[in-house]
Length: 285
Image (cartoon, rainbow, N blue to C red; front, side, top):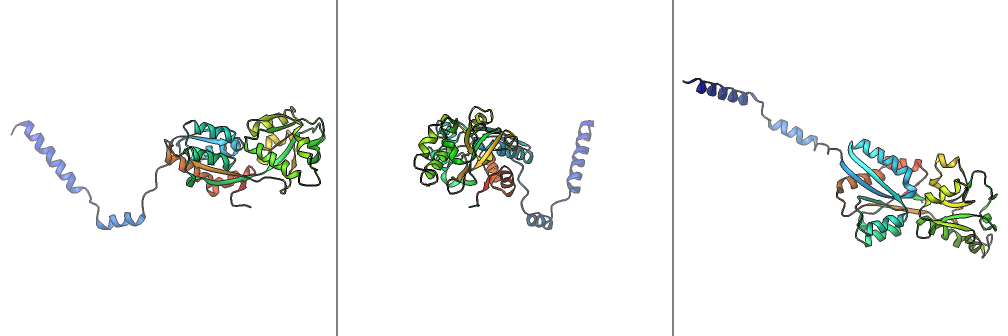
């Protein structure tokens, strides 16, 4: 026998011996694995683009960090703007994975354009309006009636922005209340110096002193903002409780990741984060 044939024979014998010694799965072992259930799915990974109403900036930024921590392979990018702007961008074909609106109106618009499925839309939080003024309150605003004072500089969001329309709804309710009078809305609107594209712009103008007052969401008064503005509550009878829906984008390139993010927002952990920023749980009246 040549040296080459001898080496080949020894190698073949070693391989056969190794196979014979390898333990095989027994029926009992297979049954044990089956009873234990399926293994956990790996953490979600990939890039996620979330379009969210400007009023969600702080809360969703924290949720994005939480989502990335829970899914080390995931990266979340946010586009915060007025809901009307985001819905328009979706209608124009902007690639995205999740849409969170401050109004059902714009979620419905995105459903009509085919970017979200109506059945996938879920209400995740609610919000309410509040009047704000600079910390030193130069116009001396003490009650809602003061919004009609001649010469007051009032800043509002445009009516195309959810909070802007809600502000007009407040004025419509107020004129039906004898305490305000039929001319209240007209007098207030005479004081408007600017209509903004999103609620954060209203907040900024007020705390910079460029306006004497503005109407924003109560959630916009973050701890840092609270150092710069005063707030005046609007009673429930005159307020509008804003409803926020969320949905994955129907043609998302990372549908699994989109569903996972929506699930986090709707989860008890996600709802706790939202409540920390002053949002009303979706189930609350």
